[in-house]
Length: 236
Length: 208
Image (cartoon, rainbow over all chains, first blue to last red):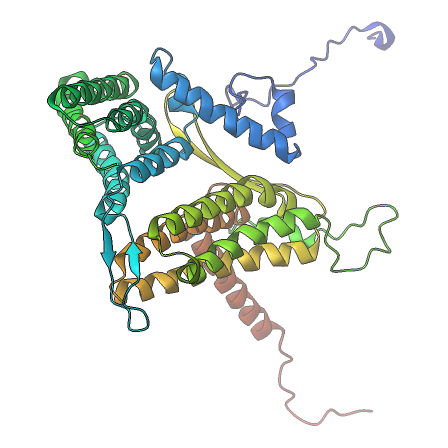
């Protein structure tokens, strides 16, 4: 007869239901990629200030990574469109024309409508439509990047042209002459090359290598147009 | 069979000591205020900017700033606090993009839920109408502003609808499953009523 009291039964702590394979994983919450699971669940109840500071820091780090394009993960994995919006608005404001179009309004014929000329709206249309078209081109060529990631990278890489725009604006305060024009030209070129290089660093991996040139060309063209707008802005 | 997503509004359990709270009270008045504030402000500024300033650019900037603040507030703050819903996107190790839609079960104030969804639906509707008006009156400058407004408010609406409908199913498949669920229910009730209808009596019942 079996001795029931002395049998040693081993009950495993975890019974594998079988058939599911590896089910553990980590769900990434924005801003907490790489952090422990305990911290992730708190984002649902976190105070407003913390959310705000987290997003602000995310935008700031991305600006930094555009200037020194060594680490790619931040811009690609945790994309956001705040940077592109800020940069686009800034460029549009700086590049606006100064023409005040007199508009005849029946009540008061003297009113001038300040609409900054077409340059303001142009910048918005070019940046957002251009980014969309470049992204579409990348995806159609077989790129493995998502739409928003690509728009994010292209938008953030507008930072170098922004710097050259500020520099050019400062130069324009002085009397225009050939030498100063050459300085502006060089500054714009530097911004353009820097932007294209940074964009290529971030987007390069997602392209199949045989088609890299085809993918670079629209990016090149995009920043070329923006730089053209910057260099051709001469009124202060 | 259609998967039934538990709706947040059905959670009627009261916390201890909360039985006396009057219905219609706002649990988070400040959050509700900010939820509505930026949306209303951007609409008001759009309509009235002609009175205050001749400059299209400064009006544009102010409206875009208000719209962005509204987008951020609704997406990150008022959604999770007022109705316990949240949506975002993350890129995994392989570079695949995933959209995540979450719904939290818990007590939510009925009044806040009503305010939230009402304003979420109404404002994109208003902005769409204004877009049509702007396009048809050849005001393309302003149409651009309204387009930005429609995009931002519309994307919040879309995100929260997907949260409500359940785990990352697409909206069309959710509607399909809801529709087939309704049709099946209707057919089933028809059939059961056919079978449970009392058989017609053939003659006067005789009692002995």
